[in-house]
Amino acid sequence: MNRAEELAKMFVAEAIKYGKVRKSGDSRLMDKQSEMISKVAAEIGALGENEINILNEFLDYENEFVRLHTALILLKTETNKSVEVLTNLTKVRGPVAVEARIILSELKKGNL
Image (cartoon, rainbow, N blue to C red; front, side, top):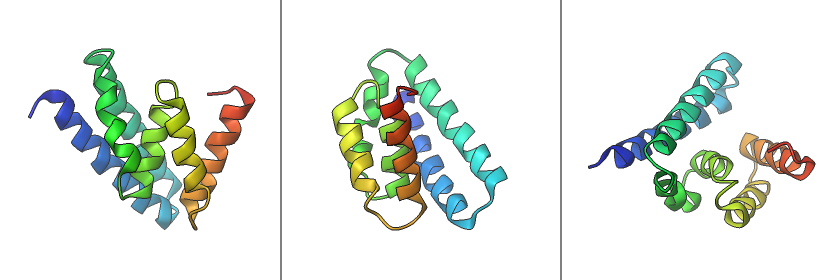
């Protein structure tokens, strides 16, 4: 397994942890998990311009929080697919729908 693949596995694990923490409502731990996800994504990106594409497969991942964070990370490179994933997540019950709506709103405003 190469470094990008190792980091991709970490990305999935951290996104799943974020989902569990998000459902518990612990904002301090949510912030920590968000930082971890961003850090792992940045490490993947630092490996090379095309390495971030290793996350593409996670746009269809079974866990909704993995899909959410993948779509957010890939918004600039896979805009159409990311928007489609986020739009679908707005239809899911629970906190992931709220976050997907916020991301889409910020994208529409030009903040992302």
